[in-house]
Length: 216
Image (cartoon, rainbow, N blue to C red):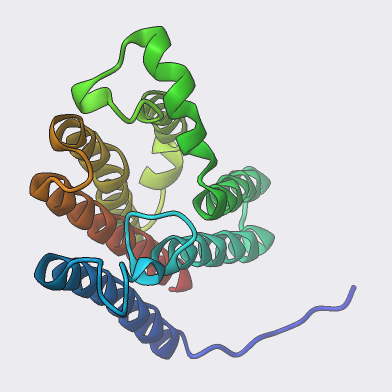
């Protein structure tokens, strides 16, 4: 069996990831500031390409890439992990992140909103109804992986817990808050805009921290 070895400057790669995350977020914030100051009826229009709360834009594609990087790193870690049970856990987690990456690109989870809302009469904080099955799935996976995470070295374990907390707080917690403000004032509600900007910031921070942790 042929083995392939790769020499990667992990510190430089981590710096690149963190810098790219900051740039993508900064562009998203700049876009909202521009719309607030000048509106969308200018030569630059609404700068949709760098928006953070829009499908098929730089922010969603970058998050998708971060998830795919994490999935590839977990696959590589799984190849050398011992015992065999750990390999399976890494591979399963890599598979979940791969599906999350595809979902981030095509926004499949948002297709659940319209079918679920009338059935359960979701509103306010549950206005974006996909967070209900999303929270259940996160809870199940989180509980299943508690022993796995706790068995890791303290520094790695703490960073993984922190990255998960950041991402879930943004993806589910701030999504619920944003849904509440959206139900009150729509997309132009300043509270909704603040909520989704914070949401995307936490998600990006969580994914970046997780990917850089895996690189160690």
